[in-house]
Every structure is written in C-alpha cells, then in structure tokens.
Image (cartoon, rainbow, N blue to C red):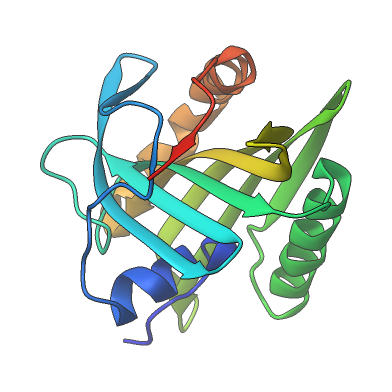
Length: 192
C-alpha cells in the first residue's frame, strides 16, 4: 500500500526518512498537557537554520502509527500567521483537487493569531485507510530579539475500521479541542 504524506511541514516525511530522535531542540516543558492527556516528546528535528520541530505523543504511541499527536514548530523570519494559513490552504486545496474527497477546512482569526481546522484522508481503490483531523494555531512571537512563527498543532487520526466511529464522534470533540488549543498558554520556547 502506498504511503501517504499529508502532515503539515513534512512531519511524516521526516519521521519516516530520518532516524528517530527525541532530544529537545527547544524547551517548553515535557510532558505537555493538552486536554486530559499528557504528551511526551517523541521526535524532534532542526532541518534548517531557521526551523525547529518537535512532536509529542501520549505514552505508547509512535510517530508512524499515532492516534494523537501534539506538535510545536518554530520558523524564524517574518512570515505572518496569515501567510502560513494561506500556504496551508493552498496545500489543502491541491489535496482536494487531487482526489481527497474528505478534505475540508475552516479558518478562525483572533487578533494577530490564526487557527486552521481541517480534515484529510488517504486510501486506495475507494477504500479509506486513514483519516486525520488537525487544528493548527499560528502565532507570531519573538525569541532573543528575533521574530518567529510558532505553530502549535493537535492531530488526531483513525485507521481502517475505526474511521467511521471516529467521524461520528468528531463533531462533539471538535469544539472542545478548538477551544482548548485556542486558550492554551505555553512558556516561550527556549532554544537549546
């Protein structure tokens, strides 16, 4: 079966192609609490001079087969939350055009922050193998006098026979998770 690559900022690509690394590239605390779950650092990368990414998972979950993931990424530069959301929407529209019939999204604006809530899927021959629902929260911050875009995102997946029950429960979880991510306060990342 073909591998699917649809996570924001190439996280699946990095997870699959680069040896697993879980040394923090920046510090915000570990574990991170989101909702009722504790998410522990499971993978990290610093693939470019101005880009850092860390993925966190509930105990027992792995990057290749997670059900829930919390990700933080830092991109130093002048990119705004609006520009980041526009780029992600272009990617999602391309997915839809290329056959992802479940691909949907909504954008929320609050002052200088943006949130993007979306659903994507993958499969073959008319059968879904995975459905992923993500919430991205983009925020402009400053670290050591340098502007940076902070992306905080929550991802929840369902595979195979779990997809239909997942989709049925999604409306009740969606509002709660959107509100949780929207009000979550993390300490300012400290680079290591």
